[in-house]
Image (cartoon, rainbow, N blue to C red; front, side, top):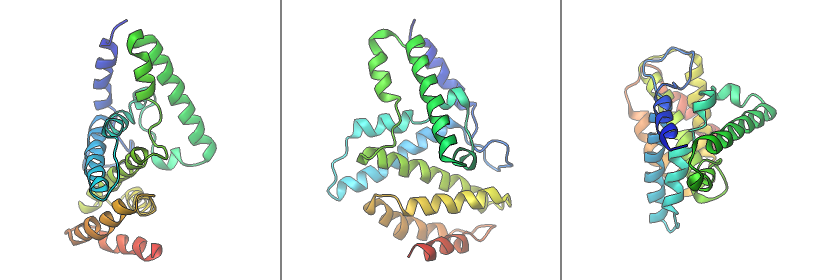
Length: 210
């Protein structure tokens, strides 16, 4: 047993595409998604730190880099499906957890198994780092759907995805990050020249959350 199997499985994440089954101008794979989530979390972690928070950077990077590794086993399941019911979401999480546990026991060298169990567990929790992970993960959904709307993708799913991501971002328990997102980033988003009226979609959500 060696680490070789884990390293080769990282290539598989490059072949798992997000939002499968829909027409997209831009394809995004799970490996790239994890890297982008880490970048978003690094920025907003810095912002939180500049406003007095204490960030456990090691925990934050481990959470963001590894948060979707389990998709190597079951692929990317579209958000509307995953959240269709609480029961389904819990079942999928259970399947991912068990497959991840089996992988660690069978493929990770014994000396490293305890570390991997800790790093690969569900990272979205009540800690600051867990909340930053959830914020960054949802932000990538926001930007992926925005890119499609900007180029004129009329698939209704991307409109729903954009507005649902925006709603959840604005309600995240991270006041400093949410304020910056709302006052700085969204203003730039609405200034963009887009094929679909993103400003109107955005204002619809902003007006409903005031």
